[in-house]
Image (cartoon, rainbow, N blue to C red; front, side):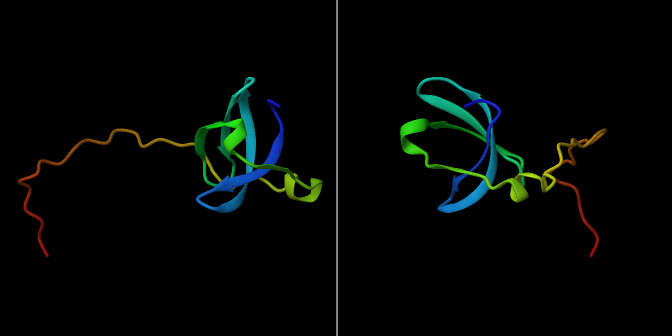
Length: 80
């Protein structure tokens, strides 16, 4: 269900997550402590209820961007 906090697997271990979007067959999950977003098939993903005292903990992931970053040419010499 959209808006639900839960626990679900990622790379074989359980992590706190938030269901961002949901339809009959798929949902978009945000892993709140890593910031990873993943679209999954509901029948292939296992969801567990998140106990309230874990849901109250703040999210560890912070959405951010780097500003004014430019690429360095490949032929740049770096001094040791």
